[in-house]
Image 1 (tube, rainbow over the protein chains, first blue to last red):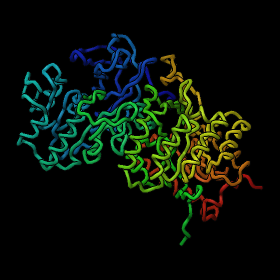
Image 2: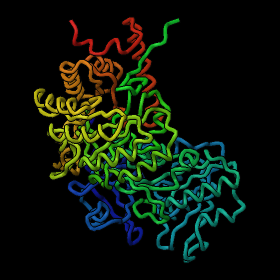
Image 3: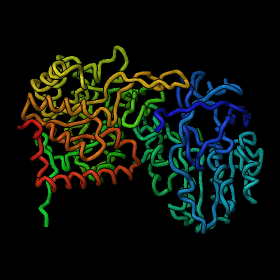
Image 4: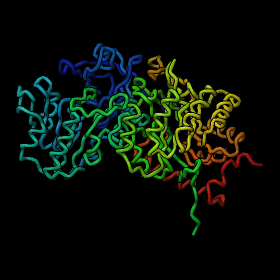
Length: 273
Length: 316
């Protein structure tokens, strides 16, 4: 067994998705299932968890957050040919929950598109409807990838600059197309997960048919430190994909670096926020 | 029918049945301990609680060096004792005895924290052993390597509660130095001693990056590879103090490891790394399988109570 957690990957291409989001393509592929994450490390800086945006070729989509010494700020200083250190893929996958016999709906809010896009691409029977939301048109991520994998992509923006004005949860609330017998794959800011779970269960969807990928402050990424706790679970080893039934209480709060509980609706350390 | 087996321990009046706990730091938050307490475990131990909020070190904080060797430097992150107290209250009922681990910097902090938790803690474990503190800090191993500080903190703790005080010691120095720490704990009234914590100041260098992997560079060594050191420390405590209850910690992976610690003189054991790296459901299955294997060993050796094995490796 390899004795080390991190391997060197060279940056082959960089795509500017938005002013604060870049997709890094690497020099070799990775064997990750949709929903799995890696720890990415810059020696002498720090490491961070990222959902694998694509396996072949291997993409990581990184949002610039924190101060100038943060992992993502340093990653944004990198160029083609520079190196990042990547762990083996970790955690579970959306595929562990996928039921072939029913229809799937996707709810992707903001950076929540990242783990859902590779899922849409790998599915034999494509998602019935994909709801894609962001604050503004500029922040819609992977619209093309989703449109190639579903005949029905509904876009919302908070400011109405593209698609329907409002949020995915408004669309869910008002819409009549929801078939409660379907599966719902949800990823996005914590508040969106929390609200979506409530709305969908009110509409009669079983809690274990609502599948969510969660983001928590993750330090070790392999069960030891527990920083990424969500209720009784740890996002790194038990997730990051859970059924709503498993985590509905844990969605009511997030923890900061020390473990301090933050109930604020605008917690800004999560990748999907 | 075979008679019921007794896998329990008694730590200064506190029953731990079976004689297995998590090591402090694994399953850090009360909501996780509540779940862990549903499994085949005798007591649950909190992550070390600090008086003030501490953020701990930057990632990477926990890495594998090889099979059976991990290093970590989480750095005693804690939201502060007041939040943990609230979370523990919210998590009640927790179905197993609760051991609250405290990483106090001073006697006054220890006293205040013990008062705060005394209502629902069944015992306290004094962390004198975390190696991942920064220069100038006064908690964790900055206590465990100075017998005078062990005495002073332990006395303060003992005067603050009737609950058992377990002192968790680092594997300091050679056995003569280590026994100075043990003497200090026993003479100041400790009800039990747990040993060891991770071994201080280990390092893993990534040879592609040519740089230490942990952001703290140094970290405590854990995993199955450190077990012989833990067994030796437990053996030497038992050799000198035939009656003090001992918690054996360090490198436990399988049931035979637990039996080895018991034979060396441990009354109960705690499992860290190998419990932590499993999924939550996997941890439950793991604990059940440990119990089953210990019972098989007991069957084979015609033993009804695990206590019959206690310190047996000292006889002959």
